[in-house]
Image 1 (cartoon, each protein chain N blue to C red):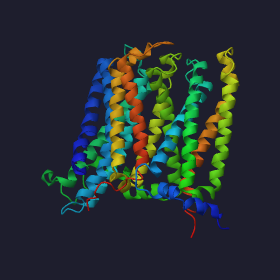
Image 2 (spheres, chains in turn orange, cyan):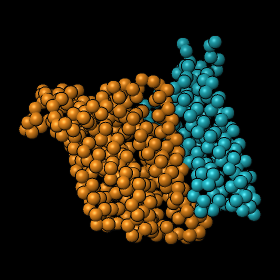
Image 3 (cartoon, rainbow over the protein chains, first blue to last red):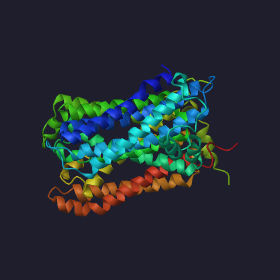
Image 4 (cartoon, each protein chain N blue to C red):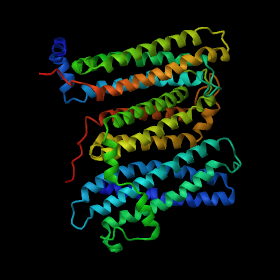
Length: 327
Length: 168
């Protein structure tokens, strides 16, 4: 496996997955189907998570092909700018979907129409449009058989002309991130604050499921989850900004990629917790109650993986340049 | 003004040199990793107690949160030990930086607040939830503020030092 391979493997998911998610979401709204609505919100959140390593793998793919004959760096830059804008909207859609899922807890019947669902609808439509552009500009880089022409950077439909004005220039954006040492220090500071929000709240939940402080009922502790999400969101923003500032530094580093893998596994772990009935069994835990083995297993995995994320994050510095750079 | 010579003496010991220069994954970055684990335990546990005392997730009974204090102290112990080792690895870098002393002062205050929280809010088993919140709210705000300051001062150590090692 190399970076172009990884990028191709991942990049169809956020594009096609978001389209599928939007289709299901629209059907669920028309048919007032609560289960389908939840499923589409879960798809949006999953695509938002997968979009992160997809975006990161682009830098390595670029490094591998930019020196090949017939590959235009301008086209790559255009694709990268489009991806940055699409990622922003994808992550907002994912975050809103999680808010929607949080609000729909314990309501078997369709919740009343609320601002969250309107916002998910709006942002997911914009994300699909932007993702289409990411796919098109990406395909232009290395697929001459499509035949839109390599040099026609400014050509295209009216909508892509408008979008191209809104897309950031990747190189200017990177300069902006690294121009001031104080801005960088501020982002890193927030990344540690996010770590504390996340580990503090997720940690106490996991420990309670594992049998620590049994006097505390699980249900009330679960109200801390939005704070964990806030910590994750803070670290997602500061992490992506740091990556765009020094993409070469992170790309060729095993610790960084293992950290991404651990975060993806945590996504699966969260899905397992809420979708296998482990959450329902934990939610019934009053003072003194013991959790069933499945819930304990998931809580243990969560703790292990979060500490793995911290560990791998700390080793990024010392292992940079551990992946051979494609010149 | 040149840094005091004892910094050079520490830096030239075999242990300090090994911590700083070894390629082993168990040297500098290992210590730094455990310093981060300690931070997660110490500040993470404080954060949960502070949030509850400020009225977040009010259905959580306050008294059993007392169980989080040992986690805080384990985190503090890990960070005291790893912190000393980090200073041994780079004595000139840390001890010539005013931010380092600011960090120690803020941590001192934060730990004092942590102790006050324990004695004021958790020691007396007969207190009602409302009493505990009334006694703890101001301390919880200070706790959040001071731990945020401690993290910030710690992060800034990486960006504000005057010497990395003893100037030759």
